Length: 81
Image 1 (tube, helix red, strand yellow):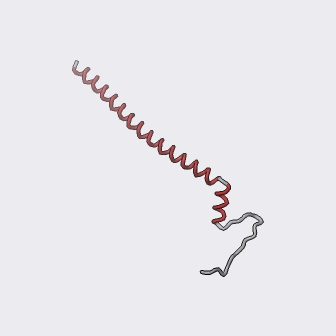
Image 2 (cartoon, one colour):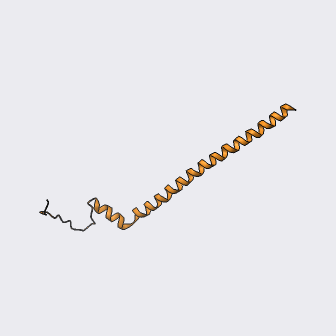
Image 3 (cartoon, helix red, strand yellow):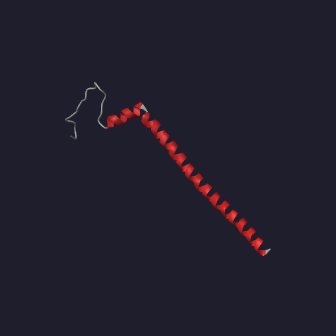
């Protein structure tokens, strides 16, 4: 009878520990999903901003690019040159 009681106690304890382990894993997974969702929203906003035509043009002009057919001007002999 004692052996049956010990076996039942072991089974209940084992199941309880597995449930706690699963609960902890669930919390870790939820935190990871939340972090990935935040990163996804950030990347979507960044993609939308960088896809904007005015942003593309501003970035290209900062790199020294110009539109086809535009005439480049070089201004020299300014004070401080």
